[in-house]
Image 1 (cartoon, rainbow, N blue to C red):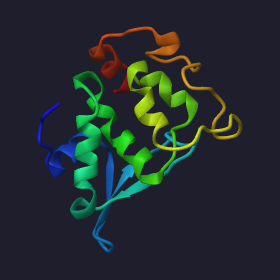
Image 2: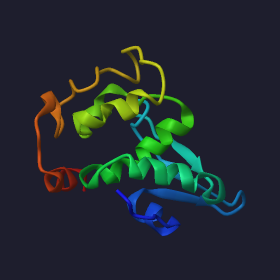
Image 3: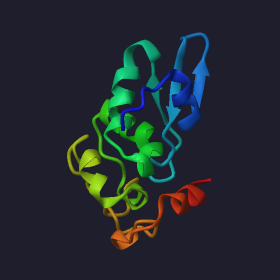
Image 4: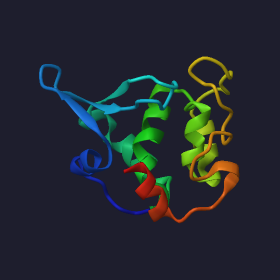
Length: 136
């Protein structure tokens, strides 16, 4: 995609918290890295907007709402937990694989990529608007 993002786009696409004292934002990453975990990744607009734009550009229109997750995985240098992959088109899995080493299956990561029932479970194609409805 060739859409130039603004910081407001980040706020519109991703759930963020603002810490006025530290003057930084946090992209909420609940269940992204660990099953049943509430967490977040710090986002500083002056430092991180270019990397967020890159993540957005690496995805197509149907997966653009995953830019925050891709940005966060790249920033922390870790692959998401396996269950997350069921919500990403299989052709984009490599982008997430490239974020860090393969993860051991176990506590916090109970599923292998793609084995958790979700919109792309068993690589089943689903129109992007259906995925969006499920994620509301």
